[in-house]
Amino acid sequence: DGLSRTMTHRRGRHRVVLALRLSSLLALKAVTPVQAHDCDGDYEAAREVCRQREDRPRVYIHHEAPLEEFLRGPDTSGALEAYNRILHFGEPHRPCDPEHPNHYLHGDGGILDIFEETNVPLEADFFWFPVWDYALCAATNAPLKPWENVKGVVDNPSCPAYIRALRWLFNQPLWMRSDRRRYLFYHAYQHKLTTTWPRDIAEAMQSVSFLTIEDRRRADRTQREMWCRSITVPYYVEPRWHVPWMLVDQGRKNLAVFGGAVDVACHSKLIPNGCKGYHGAEIRRTLVEVLRSDESCAVVEVNHQSRDQINPGELFAQAYSQSIFCPVAPGDSNSSKRLFSAIASLCIPVIICDRLDLPFQLSVDWASFSVRIPEADFLANPQRLLALLKETRNNSEKLAAMRKALLSSRDMLLWQPRLDESGACAGAGAAVGSELRFMTAHNYTSYECAHDSHWHGRMHS
Image (cartoon, rainbow, N blue to C red; front, top):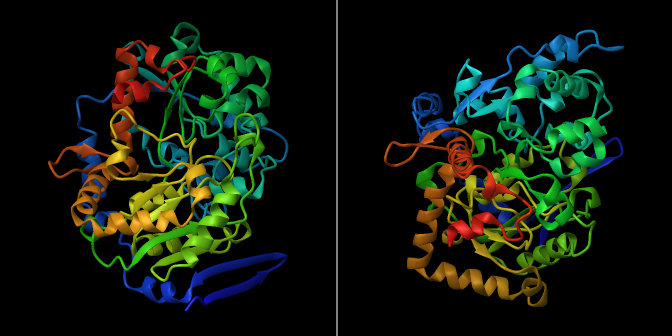
């Protein structure tokens, strides 16, 4: 009937707007995501199995790092307690919809889902510095933007506490005598570090290896030549939003659903070469118009100001679990967590983003379970999207194959360890370990960013 329902709530100067098509709102009540361990196997049992793997790379962790020294400073009484509380997502620093795996790697011990720990540096394949930049900055009352607290990440990891921590590391004999490429760090925005860190820090870090959710340097030749090794990893999706595997083809009443903000704007600091070629806002507005024109589709619209008052992860998981396809458009930058929210909900992703850097292209066959539409093609003929999705839905053999591939690939794109159908260890940690082994086996040369073509593409061919 083309009607929409708008619920408005005011809190201070913030306005929360959730827009759902009325016909789709009624369809979203049937399936509620269940915690992963209820239907996907016991998480802790899977973690125990995964940590017995003999093929994990070995890591030396700098447990001797003196946190109290890093946290010292004016007005930092109780900083150590605050750091530990943040590390385990204690209030008031619990993001309502965490995107980054930092808290999983540091606070939940997820680094050992990737590595086997050794106390002998000479036996280590990699070295890990167990200090979370966001937790250090927040615990020492560094000025953080609201969205940084929402996401549990720092845009500019140059607060005094983290700089002290890095300088301590750089003065350690192990750092001085080791191959810097074997030091592994997670930074979401490592492409900005050359301009935000002091020169001595930037120069010391330019030869290390990175985990990141989006390697934005690939479009920037200067950055590629300066920062050479990185592995793109998935965003983090909380286990309680993982849809049970047996619902991959059940209860999906909607053809497609889009979840997210429409009022996005290009974040020039997060996109190489500024905002040239950015069409995120236009794509999202057009996508919402197209989906609202069809009764079989749904829209869950949440603006940026609402994220501290609602849990978008819950809204999106419920919507995605009712839909066959989930279009994914650029956000403030070229990446979006919603790609992985859709995968966690076993909703076939429809990627409308030309410069999205997909993780694990060495081991994940993205084309087998996703649809990719060039931005220009979508904007030139938006209605073609619905025709393509309906054609795919009506081809039962093709749809079944995509769902099977999605179910199989999901095991490698969610962070919590799990066991696949054969009982083997799966999860993003295992996939990171595989890529690290490949990187070291080829003496890091395949990860040199100065190469014009992406090495993943060459390997897949």
